[in-house]
Every structure is written in C-alpha cells, then in structure tokens.
Length: 341
Image (cartoon, rainbow, N blue to C red; front, side, top):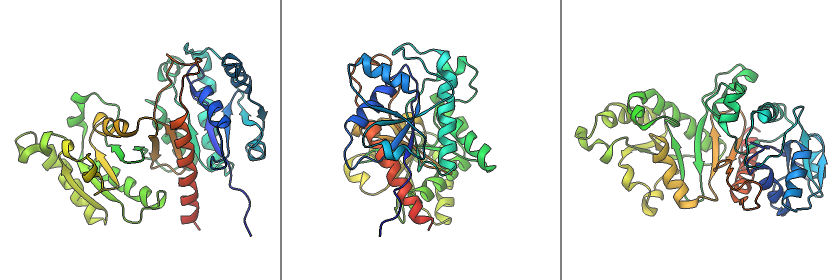
C-alpha cells in the first residue's frame, strides 16, 4: 500500500523584473508525469500579468502549501505573499525587495515546518535588495542566517554546482582573485570537504564519495616553485580529511583534472576559487547545471543562471536549469527522507 503523496516543493519567484516568473510558467506548462509537484511563493497578479505580456494562457490557483499538490495538475499553484510585486521586466526596483525577501523567508519556514519537501529559489538581483537595506552578501548567506535563526545551530552553507557530468564546489566564492590566497585557510578547505562528503553520502546517496581537491596555483604549486599555499594549506587539509575517513586526494593541477578520463575518478571537485569551479561545469552543461546549497538543515537548489534582465518579458528564456533544479531537489529530499528512517 502506498503512503500519502510527498509534500510539494516550495519555489520562490525570485527577482520579479527578471525571467523568474516566465520560466516558472514555462516549467508548469511543459510538466509531465515526472515533474514533481511544486508551488510558487509569489504574487498571482504578477504571474498573470507576465503571462498576458507573453500572450500565454496559464491557469493559476491561489492556494496554501497544504493544498498546492491537489491543484498542480490543473493550475499553477501560487501561495500569496503579504507584499505585492510589480511586473516591470528588465527594470528592477527596490519596491519589490520586501516581497523577494519574504518569499525566501517563507520558503525556509515552509520547509522547516514540514509543509514543503525542499526549497527551489529563482534568481535574485542583489542591488535592488542592497538599496532596500538587505545586509547579506547574497542568497546563500541569507539562507544560512535563516537556518541558524530557526534552529539555533550555526550553519556553514556550501555552494555546489551539479551538472550531468561534473560537480564542483568553490571553497572561496565571491572574492576578488587578488584576495583568494590570503583568505584561504586549512580549516576552510577541511570544513568544506567534511560538509560536501557528508551531504553527498546522505542526500546524493553516494556511499563513499570521492573528493578531488584542486590546487590553488599553476601545477598545484610545482613543489613550491609557484606558490606555497598548496603544500602549506591544501595538502594538510586533505590529510586531515583522510584521517576523518573521507576519500579525499590532491592537490591536483586544475588544468588536468576536468577532462573526461579524470572526471571518472571522482564524484566532486573541491576548487579553491569561483571561476576555477564554475567555468568547467558551466562549459560542459550550461543549461542543465544546478546550484545546490550544502550544509543547511534543508534541501535548497536553484537554477544556475542569473535574472537575465536583457531578455525578461520577451519569451526567450529557457526553463531547462529550473526543471533540473526542481528534479534534483525532489531527488535529494527523497534520499534525505529515506536516510532519516
């Protein structure tokens, strides 16, 4: 006998002036039996306005998280926010900031409250939020804050890019390249490896994940000739991870670790800075790569692209990455549920 249907996923609308509203419409319209049920935390009037702008007829059901799955087959379920949103594609404004922040906050509350199985976030624009007083560097840091606020346990969110052929993790993220070497520590590399190894085992169902660790410098330092960080910081972190039972190895020269034969030897690549991680995974599968946040007490995925203001409202946006993000969130939620039994 089958049990009750799983809780739907909560999907935030993201930046209203971007492509979030239209890719949500496109994903629901192209749904099949394999697409997991979800609801949108947003504004039904905005979504309807974007649909009219694109000359799309989409039924919308204003609902609650508890009733969303029942509507999913016949209408796009929308859970209304207290803050209304304006539809002005390509023209971001601080007037929408409160609603954008509310959607993220409500999504975390729904997942931690058991009303949603996981959180999928559409892209946000940081400047309108900063102009409205938002004090976090970005989405990921805000999610870590909300997790700690709700649970009382400090969170260390780790960004992972997951594509069909490659998973990568940047140990340092949004930092100027000239600051990376000075900010990198053994503890950062070791902590990232622990979180990644644990979440790959528990959420991705990889029993003994293999962690390939990239060097910081060309040729992983060339024995100290091209920098000491690989020997002084990264190698000791790898040794510590191995002592803790993780299958970590390196540091590896980054220019030889992403070809097909090399990728078959590991499950994830730990990289030392943003572009070292994002360039290879986006080159291999730009439209199918998903941004996954590890180290949180809930599932969070996001499409791996931005707000795309230049094409917002023109019907040109592709929903592929959002489809992949929704599918992966469902898979991770189901794996986590099985492991918790």
